Image (cartoon, rainbow, N blue to C red; front, side):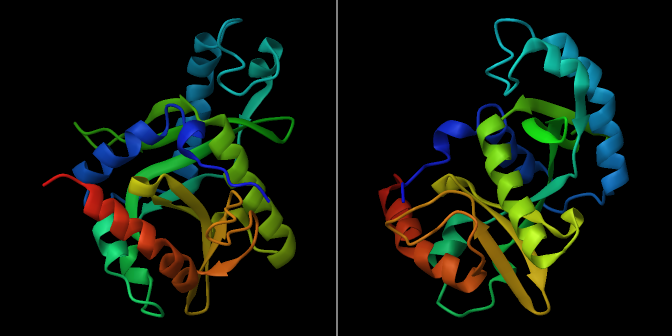
Length: 223
């Protein structure tokens, strides 16, 4: 198995997450329908932005694909704080570490296949939903691949899933809840930590494996 970092795959998406999370400690309630509506309305903006020079950077295989783009099932984003992860003890309840953010990934599809994504979030001024970025093709493909594989196994609807991000460690997982458990799915292989893309794991186990990395990162931070 290969070890792959998400750091180089996130493009425009990651830069939006941390600042907005800080602005909305209690995320406003939004519905899937509202997110989809905003994302669909933004497809025309995306079509105007894409040209012969940047269509591949945005994840499209040809310029003609953009006119056929549709919006897939949104994927809400929760984040894990580095300090809380560093203090985590194995088999503790992982739920308190999951902090919902106001961001939602909206996959951009062409003929049902993932090409790109949008980030839908509330505006700082009035809280109205808007699209804050396009791109992140490698990240959204990995997230959507893991979600679809899990859906095939579990027969769960796409709306059951959400993204769990550890921003300081540049890591993302697809997640869902089952009874009283939180289950996480790595989206990339990592031989060092024993993560296999697509493998469903208990959140307790995932967090326990990430603790040493989180503690090193905390130690390396100045001040």
